[in-house]
Image (tube, helix red, strand yellow):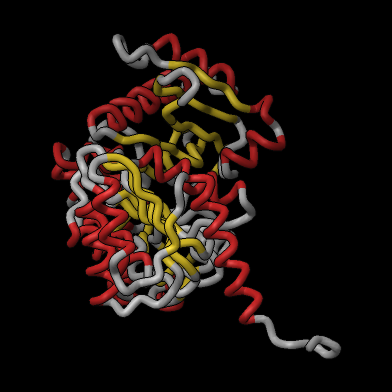
Length: 400
């Protein structure tokens, strides 16, 4: 789960991380009032959406008067902001953050990630702040400093000093950097976050460090024990299909392909997407129906997958352990009947009550395409996709 910049800054403030004075607002009138309350002569108006690259897309602008702040907020609120992360459809801006503008002397990057190789939380920093860390890693990897954190003792002062020196933070900035890094770590640890970053961490006038922008992501599986974090969830920023799936106990992530996937188990779902890709296709989604896939759950999975207009076929891959293949087959037929599904359906069943499940499918009136294994299912899926594409192609001159 992701949260907005202003929410991240509220969390960091409680851990002693210095952030600019600011208020989140929903109207241009509120923006003008916020600027008056903050004081000063320059303010930053920042679109609040779950996306990076807002500044390049015109979602971060500076106003030098109350009227200018009001005008900028009016232009941003209600607009569709298109960034490299939102896609061409963009994201509707419903609120902006009005902050006191700072005179920036230098920008750094500081972040915490979970390193899958070491299976540890890792502190990452760079002297090239204000730029996507992925770009820095690709173009100038020598500018990135990493420090692996032992979970038994947490982030220690000497590690913070080592990283700070590595990126060029010295003198009076050093104790400030240590405090900020340790505060960021405590915030990540205490909230079950999977990522926390400050970009940029800026040296501003007065030789002070300030977190000018920040973002955090959280482990969805831990939200049940973090009710205050769960309250920060903004459903408007999420794919409606993913929100719908969550309400029915399904794990769904939309992708950009045309082969709809309904699978039980996250590992098998990943393997299914890999098989589709190996055979030249593109999965339209990740969908794990989980271990207790009732007929109703399967029917909801169909409904959610079919909300994507790009889906041309559906591949069902079930290895039943806790599940039963006859339950799954009953759910498939129920969905076909209730939702009037006419596209090709490839089904691979294995495990508990597999023969009963296959019998239910074969005696139904629906023309299911039965696969014997995962590779067979992926091959048959791509055959059906190619048929649909060829049928949709307009006839060209010289063709019969």
